[in-house]
Length: 550
Image (tube, rainbow, N blue to C red; front, side):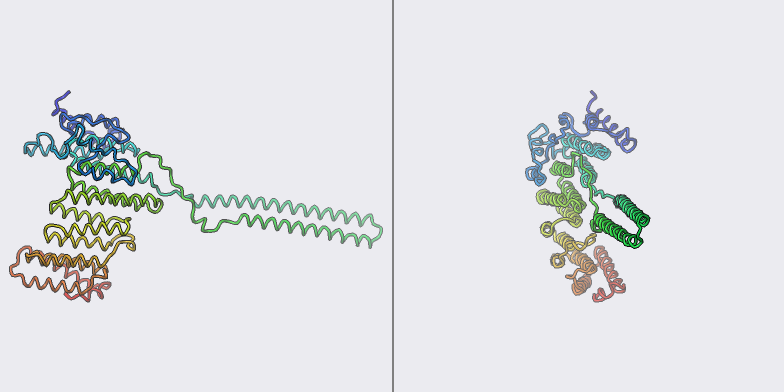
């Protein structure tokens, strides 16, 4: 065998060739799981350190993959609502087995501060991450197996490696989730109305043919009866000697034949009437609602199984990079909520289940925030991400949504620095008055809570000691007030906006020396006032904004 360093060079060239071929001709792609196993045997120097044992071969039951980190003990039952046992997430695979202690460590040698080696390492791991995105198969079950094999090989590589490579697996699985959704929860197939109308026309034609046949038979019988009666009358006139007797006998025969004809016509009319009643079409309401047929789902990997795969993948990453795991939990929660929203019209039971799973993912993200994210700037980024994720969710019950947004507002109020508190509390006000969705009638809106958030922000801004920071925060809060006033929040009136403008003018008048920060704040304030003045002369908003004093 080649030395480890030479094997690494070969692996780099190999993965570059696969990435280039995977984007082009079909023949150069990895076609199945066995080929992928062989590829990772060659790529071993890129995914693990020298001397580490190779992972076990792929197990279709997904028992080869372990869990991840200290969070596993709390999250083993995160998918309990799915009926999934936590056996595959046993901590012994990580901390009691041959790969114990690999998480949280840098690759062997730690590069000795060599920037060139660090850049080379990152480039190698980026190639492995790119490889994940060219692994694809038309069969979703095989595509899932490929992702499972990939995760099993990159999992023991250590914190520095999985921080780069595991997010690629997660996003590839999210893409596969959309494909599986289309198979498991397809749009219904309705019987075309033209086919139904053609069938009805054919049956109507058949009925008309039977009806015409009966009428022809009846008319023939009537004609025969007439001819018989006529022959009888002629015979009587020829053989009878008495003209009076012939005249008397002739009307009697004609009366009998007429009676028979009338009876037959009445019977035929009744039969035709009954057939018309039986042949009457169904009511229009039944025609307008044709039967909906759903194609049968024949795959072994469904959306629930993919969500379990995603949860395990992020749990592996969480100890190595909590902030990245936090963001991935939010991404998965948003995707699951969208899955619930799109399946609601035809699969309400599955939609309800996916809503609860999305709530579980958000809860897990909150746990990561509370336990692992303590740096101020990271907390600000995390709260901003939470607000973005929650405002894009559709399907939560009102009580569940209120619990999530209240918790987010509490995180904002507990930040260390007061300017950060002020900004994040005002940002959380958007959670209490959601706009911009297609179905605005069902969007969550609590105008009073919005006002409480903005007033809380004003109190925090007023408590800031630095005058420049103080007035800058006031201007930012004014922007929120104008926004909510424009979209029609009933709790935000013209008096609040006018009062805050007067307060900001007073602060600007009291500032002596104009710094670069103050000049920037003045420009920002001027843009807000210009916007208010434009609204005062526009037709739709003229009356509403005309009440603001600025």
